Length: 344
Image 1 (cartoon, one colour):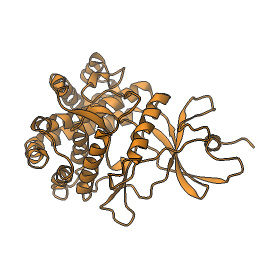
Image 2 (tube, helix red, strand yellow):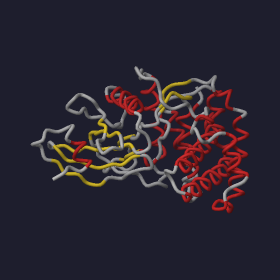
Image 3 (cartoon, helix red, strand yellow):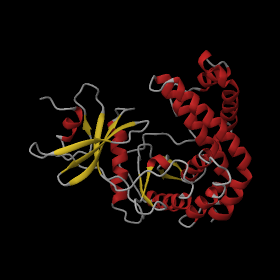
């Protein structure tokens, strides 16, 4: 009997006589995931679906192994398992050249997408992770550009291509003309501010902390058990880590009355762990906007690559459009809270 692709991967980690079971896991935009039980332990098997660059994966694993040796965080991060040949990465033999790896399983569950009650816990975790990443040194260079290198985010998302798509949307996107116009105007405006960001303090950042990349404790849903998916970790503005999560809080705010204080709780949590200089804090509103626009460009590029369909572009266009409107209504509040809780 021929082995499934998952069994072929596991054969690199476990001896032939060992038994394992494989169950479906939650797969995201970028990866395929399976849960594995073997050798009396539980594991998470990941297949990278959007790239085949082993250096990207090894850079991610180098950071994860350093963080697992840190001990200064109240939550866990994935720990790459070593295959029998000592490597942490396996190349698939199905002709696709995809890459796979195995992580030790972390107990916990995904927080509810619109749950703002854990905003303070996210703040604590973000601050702790930022401090830990300050001390991580890697042999390899980061594989992704910082957020402020917006025009390098995707090779197809050149200024001219994005302008043409936004100003003359294809027929299937014509109903989004107003939203696309507003998003493109924001892209043009923020591009003029990008050079000044290069002068702010830099360090390694996770770059994509959100509800889908975290686990909460099964016994205490207000405690972060793990931060996951370091695939996009890179060297960037250190305050960008905060801006990424603020962007998510604004976009996921749902019931405004219920979630009105989630932003403040998050910033309180961050500020209890780390502080920033005044220039960094004052940049946060623009960096939140940059994150929203970067996500739009990311998925537009995936659409042009043929990875995602038009429905994803529609969803992400409206998300960016609504997010920008929410941000414009709360910029003064965000700046005031940032100065109060984050300034050194």
